[in-house]
Image (tube, rainbow, N blue to C red; front, side):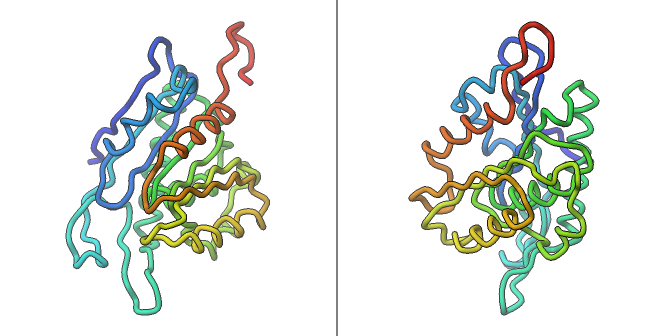
Length: 230
């Protein structure tokens, strides 16, 4: 049974938007929750949902059990992400999207976000999701199952706005790999906003500021007159 996610509700009103944010390998849903107050005005009308990955053995960590969205194996010529686990986690995120829609948040007011492994799952899910989403934040990550994206991508999200950010000194996922992922998305027509920062495999204050600005554009304030949001 899936554990309940960590949820941050808007301060003074019912949410009109949502961000589903996936943590990295070995972390949990509490990892990114503390930065919500630093994201600016968008937190005033947005529900933030931070799910927990299930515990599973991770091959590159000597089979140690930890929270992971998918297994990663070292096959000698590079690291390989488990495709079955990726698709299983994609299903988990799709269920979270449907839960937000059922709670009254339209799909086009939902952003998927993730860091590292969580970012890979966010990319895997958002680009294939059949309903139009508001956008995607991919932090210190890479595009998984890239060879199937062209055939599996969703027409509804064919020009989805994507915020990609990476550390220039990331020792775990090199910036070159992230750049290759960005270039694949650009070739397919996605609207990618790219940032790098002088940091390792981490998040920095400048990145949080830029995320807040991007989120406010992707999820603008609701119209106080009760008309369309925009």
